Length: 237
Image (cartoon, rainbow, N blue to C red; front, side, top):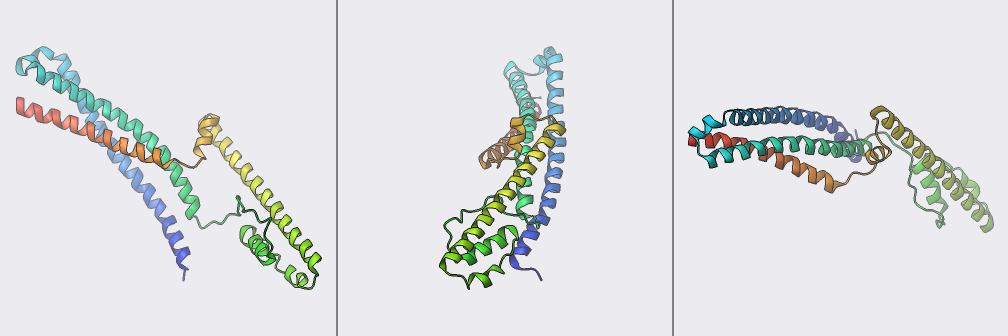
């Protein structure tokens, strides 16, 4: 039987795969739909421009101008939708990468430890060594209790120094691994240093929300513009 915290972490981690599948499914469907809308808009615009004289005999100048503007709006909005969605996906993948690490059942040593230089409780220092770096030095407590005050202080300082040494080593190893990952991504995708750094930095939730709204807005404008053209043609024809 799992503990509550473990159950929640495992449940969210397993759901990440479903979220990724839904994301791909929604993207593929919306992409196909937008291709049809933009394709029809381009086709309609081409037909009207190529047969402008014939259309002027059936529709007044303001109607034709309105249709051309709406079709152009549909095409431009469709192109913007694809661009906004691309940037939105980049931010989404950064968040997805972060969530996979946060909910993963794989444990990692502490890479940003707290300052324990002023900690005077040896039990707390031993606990932090065990929790943060899986370094069990609890056996020290038996000898520690037999020492005088000066000896206890020496042991306490040694343990704190041990903690700092291990922390620096783990942090250095983590930074080396991250730099290796960045260099690998740069070589694989031909990224610049700035682009690679951006991929491994915490994502801006404001930019993620902004491009999500812009994506939805451009998709809606493109569809509505095309629908408006269909309605106008049905009414005016």
